Length: 183
Image (cartoon, rainbow, N blue to C red; front, side):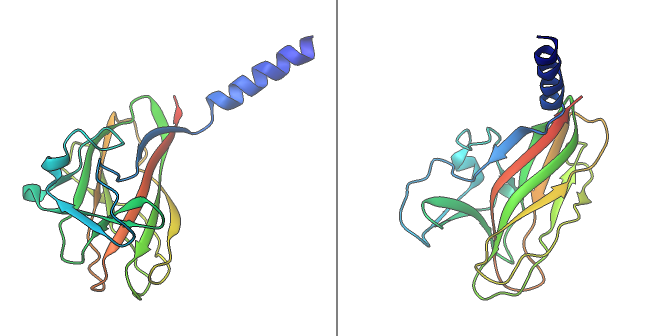
């Protein structure tokens, strides 16, 4: 009996230290399914309150945002090379450390590998730091990525997803997930 009790305590301790999902956004903001390759373009304010992660996406001046349907019935946040950056403001991460961001990335068309520019702010958007992201594969090659978020004791983090400025190819993102360990 003592061995079983010890095993339960050990497993409980391991689970308490495991990464937990704090935020997940799949960019499917209550838009109709049209068909592969179709695009929904709208001002972020038009979809307020409908994002799966529970936080409204923002753009400077409420510039248009685009969701491209593809790879089944899912949507990807599509950012044109001259498009507006998209911000996910003030994600609650209070009480967690060892924060990581995972996401999926696609470069449109036959584009070359692209290092996405994703920035993080821990002061409500007053200052931004560029995350150390890695290049994607060539065009239409969807890849999963993982990057560590800034360390420190803060309550919220904002993410800003910027357009690709190295080529004219659009970049598309899916499944932004923040995980962390409970303090």
